[in-house]
Length: 380
Image (tube, rainbow, N blue to C red; front, side, top):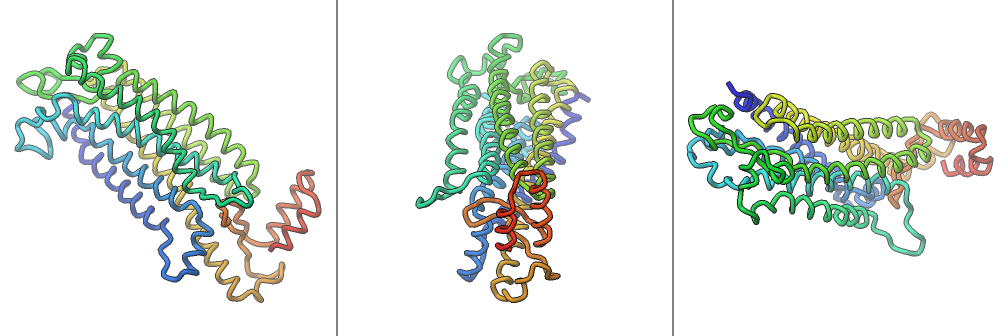
């Protein structure tokens, strides 16, 4: 049995896992939206979760990015498709690599850069404050910048994916050892031995053009540099160890998953599409995308939103019963807002004693004065 036919056994697993991750992202996006009946409850949730529009869009983008990986599964659109078994001419409506071109455009050109840029904008939003005497819409700024910076990548990847259609049809794909095939071909035909069929050109495998990989690697490098700078500033500003630990996990997972994914995809350029190496590299590349989407959405959206909702509940209880939370030494905890009304994510300390302890440590280090400590305790 050829490697392609063996890897087709993973088709149902890839479809199932991709569908589950997409479902998780949709459910999480629904929980981000402030569904509240009363105006007061809705206002409180929005105050603690100012970036809910951008967060919901990040979840949907990540879910679609994982789901789009199904487009390159050759077992779905070849003559012996596991879904379209009664369509003997499935290859005819993709003879110019339609699904491979769509996959390249949507995955590398639109969804990947949009997902990464939205996560970067959310991180940068925690470090910015709206200007005084000027109405600021943080969600609009974050989403707009993400879409604006996605457009150049989308344009470049679209040109790479569709340029061969306008120049000699699919001859670049059929000339397997040519210069143009290496840099611009989006798929490669297999012979009878590769496909496990009786005649040639009855199967095709999506491949990554070298130009598309170069564009993606360059963009990812710039993104990781910007993310590293932003998260370092966030680690310096955070005084809660739990938030610092979450940021370090986010740094490590993003660099590991995104870096390994780019490396695995680049290695496929020098591997034969119908060999074991290529097939296993793509499966690991798909796993890196799943890992990146799950961890990023959990650390940047799910966990902060859960803390924000808990802070909103505590804030409502504090407004209803203020007399029970007036003493610093009280047994009840006084959680600070994880995200203030202007979108500034702050601490989530458990009590006023924690506040005093953290600020005393900074005072000993010479980074904060007595007045700042007193003002912070007075706020609590």
